[in-house]
Length: 113
Image (cartoon, rainbow, N blue to C red):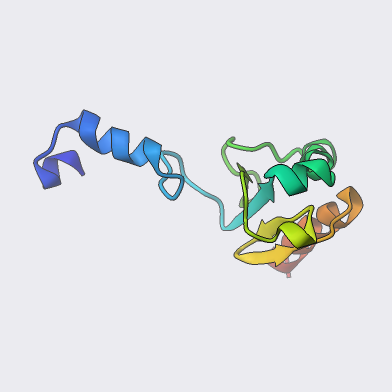
């Protein structure tokens, strides 16, 4: 990209690492974003993330497993529904750790049909 834009690599890297919309590693077919903003954190967002790690071995910022990438985000703007997880652009609110795991398992099932 730097060569194409005739810019130093450091400048392109600086932009790519500054904005959350860019990624330097491949993403899976599905994207799960677990909100850890203030409202979600207070309402149990950490337990949602821990359940995904414990039950499905899905860890944020690691290469996708079975086509599912997990990201920690700071706020998705659904504070009244805390805790929230966004899956492929669809917000799921008032989650329990068990329900969060079920939602992700549904992705696995849909992909294996």
